[in-house]
Length: 285
Image (tube, rainbow, N blue to C red):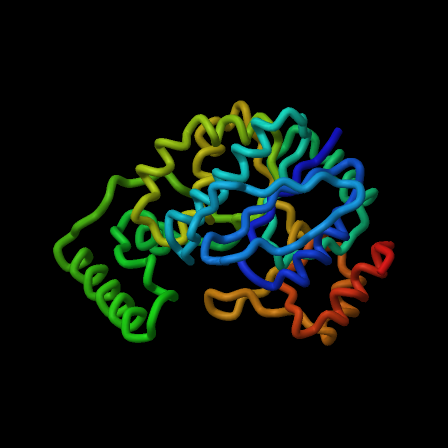
């Protein structure tokens, strides 16, 4: 009855180590993808859980297909491991659990056989814009020298506008749901997603933030086999624009008293809130 925690990290490695300490349990294994842009792998350790690193690391870029490729690398590594898991949790390196592992395992036992998502609002315009138009230059949208970022941003807007003017559009996708890419899936769902890898890479290649759509898109195609559940208390994740707000000690009382299982994101700029949460869930500091 083991769980696999699949973690995507590119910075904040002090917080990552704290996250690992919170997940350190005989009932868990931990799979880590460290962004290829990181020159030296961080030193992280656990006493009870096994830790595995993705060897063929990906240069992950915001909004880009590389986010989906990274998730696939983790799903593949964990699913094809000799270990067998009843649940696969995808997290970032700046997540923290707000409940202890007994509570988390008990909670997901109640969702046995169900795919647990943290649903987000969407509409037809967003789906059309993000998934059915061509988004070029995303690799440079937030990366590289300032002049390159500005140029990529400008050209992205121009090319997108031209697609609307000349009615240029990709093949329509039957998408109705959007969810945080931080999901909790059964082995059957992960196996189904892995079988559809080629299709996903083709249909989401030029999408914007396709990582928020591809899992529900796939699982919605086989409603007889998969039950998708939107769990409001799965994740506390407050956005300011397109970025999650960094949680601080000012949020501590709310977080500790809430029903949320996980929260994101945390930073080494305020490790006090991190340590208080770990102490609350029984992790020895």
